[in-house]
Length: 271
Image (cartoon, rainbow, N blue to C red; front, side, top):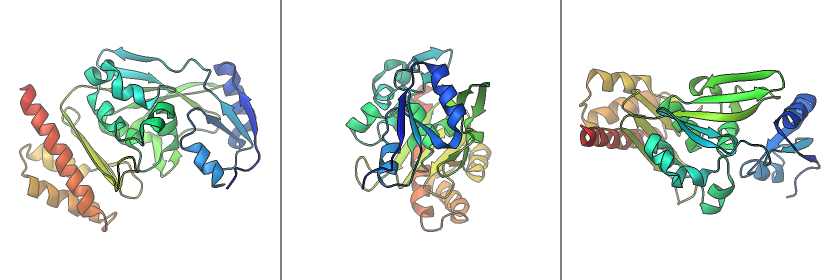
């Protein structure tokens, strides 16, 4: 299937892109890697009147600010897998990025695009939630910072306004971590995944409606008993998950158990 007709403008600078988004509102879509948007266009599930190409904007910087990794919206997924600053500051982010699609997709897809697309099976929104990340969005009217916990409004829905563009993402690091994912085949979308960060006490998952989501009952059980046995942890996770997605509760709970086990192992290794 071919995409519906649309106009195309290659933004010359950031203010140019923001002015186009302000002028066209819901009828405009920014595009960079296009790994998510182009398939939607071809399936006619998205019908923007204007595509705003942002590849020339200076949003590809990756930097470390204390214990926080800062990535411009145009940082490609492959940089998360290969840049030593990622593995030194937030290795959870690098580990999760290796599960994104195939190599060609990782070389084109962007960090900002993945988070803005908000696919419930995507790895990067899951990591942002688990590590307490923040999203910096800018419009012609100014800049605002949004906590990852307040960014997602459901599958493919975010707190971004139509005239806003993600310009930077901030990924706090530190602490032992774990990540586990199940997919039918290498490169497929995750059927279920979980991330755990000891320092923040967060456990986040995908694989249930409204993902990614934190598991407050699981987090409370781990706080009450840091050495909670795997079988007991699995039972707590399954009970919490069964309320939302009974068919996947067992699989997602297994990912939770594996992610928490990895985090505990790394915590013991660092002690």
